[in-house]
Image 1 (cartoon, rainbow, N blue to C red):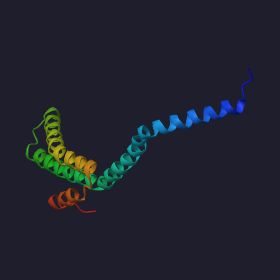
Image 2 (cartoon, rainbow, N blue to C red; image 1 turned 60 degrees about the horizontal axis):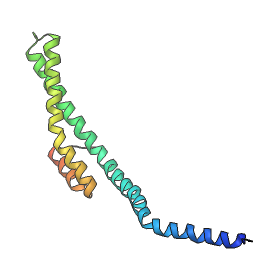
Image 3 (cartoon, rainbow, N blue to C red; image 1 turned 180 degrees about the vertical axis):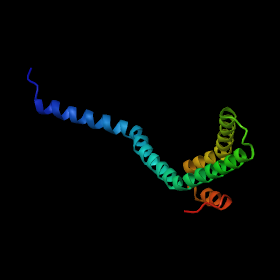
Image 4 (cartoon, helix red, strand yellow; image 1 turned 120 degrees about the vertical axis):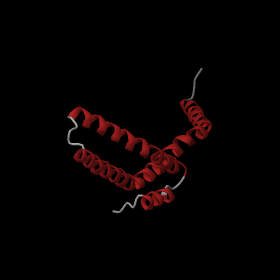
Length: 127
């Protein structure tokens, strides 16, 4: 029996095309996910300067208050100073957690501009 190669090739093309058509809907999320990921990343990047200023402002307040405390209590040994510094670090990190979580959530769900503006006004963050 003689098999015509062009018939096999045509069948193969049809099978490949059908396979592509049946998998196309499954491929849509793979196209959407990178786009959504890009949008989310862009939103996070737009928030980064404000977040950096927020962190810097809190770190500055922390440093000046620690310095003021250490000057008032010169008898503190290094171990005590380290313990107080760790406490201050934990306190600042805890206070930052909720605002940063809110910014992250807002970035995922939409534009974080409203929260960023509020954060800048509340903490008087400037460029």
